[in-house]
Amino acid sequence: MAKGRTATSFDLPRPVSLPGQTRQETAYRALRDAILDGLLAPGSAVPSSRSLGARWEMARGTLEAVLDRLRVEGYIERRTGAGSRVQAALPEHYSTPAVSTRAPRRQPGPGALPALAPGHAQVGVPFVARLANPALFDRQEWASCLQRALRQQPLESWSRAEPAGAQALREQVAQYLRRHRGIACTPDEVLITHGIRHSADLVARCLLRPGDQVLVEDPGYPALHGIFERAGACLAYVPVDEQGLRTEHLASYPMARLACVTSAHQAPLGASLAAARRVALLAWAERAGGWVLEDDYDSEFNYRSAPLPALKAIDRQERVIHCGSFNQGLFANLRLGYLLAPAPVRDQVLALWQSVGRSAGVSEQWGLAAYMHSGAHQRHLRRARLACQAVRDVLLAALKEHGQGRLRVTGEHAGFHLTLWLPADCDMAALLAAAGPQGLVLQSLSDLCRTVHLPPALILGYAALTQAQARESGRTLAKLIVACCRGGEAG
Image (cartoon, rainbow, N blue to C red; front, side):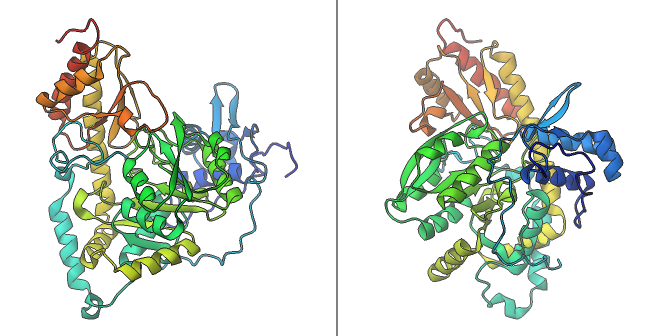
């Protein structure tokens, strides 16, 4: 397409639905790819839902939902009476699809926040973050799937090694990533691990040499930072804001080898990495010959819309290493996750893993594969998402009712925690001292900052609370905050 030309609905080919994909998801991918490919250039008009509906034979309501999702993710701007326009600022060289030297992918076969002390990491303790509520998990359904999977496994499979993880589970993970995270992958590309920290440790030990520079978010998840430091890396702390990692700082680190991001729900501030910054981050990795480690730690829990697509979904140059976990979405001690990496990295990780012993239990893998195949996994996520949203709403209402208009919340649109910004005159030391006797476990945002200085705030986890606990603890906390402000008084 000539530079400056505006695409019409007739320039956009009718999208083809993949098996198991809804018409809305099909239309979304077609428009998103048109933006990334430059068919819809930055600043150009986006065809209306009416014209697209006529061309693609789709309902306008479906396309309106697609356009609104693209707006939320930062790809387009919508103005009443003025239509929609592309707003993602794509680098010139990145908007042209690169010629891949990789063999075509085979079609699929059938089929954060710092950890607290062990005494604190328990259900019902406000406000512990990154903890799923096991009461939401149907243990009977899990037991049924596990027993069925064990009975169906042939005898030889109990001693046959599958280095990358059980084939049945890798098939289910690949299908999940294709359908729900937008990542085109096959089971052969998936490696089963214990979880995100295990995946990060394997990557660090394979890719990093002593003295290598790693870019991490500030504020960020100290557990991952510690993994990189133990690998001998030098950490460079990149600030984040309401649009995620501030990618304009990347040019200051020309020697960086790896960047670690929580793109779907930044830990701890809760921002989603904006579309333009996603593309800028990928362009940096391509230009620098570096890697991006994507920590997809709680992407399933988005309360406003469908989960944002993974950064890996638009990785055209094979620079993103994607890792996720079932430990938060299901229950903390499941200890199963996955790693999706470009072939050179995956081969190194697999060789390291084999040399130190495969540590993910095969019976749990078979059980999880059966659980996902039966549809129980998606049913659980729907139930848990609704339950977490209800608890969040109760907590927000309590903070609003008893905070005397002095409290501000961000990052509440997704995940298991939110950020509560305190009044400037709040005595943080007094608040933390008063919270303990009230049974509240508070995490100060300043504990997660290394080089940036942010206003006083707390990280409040709510996913492992009942609605009654959220209401009472929210009321107690709000009154404590007011009492710890100059001129405040306890209610």
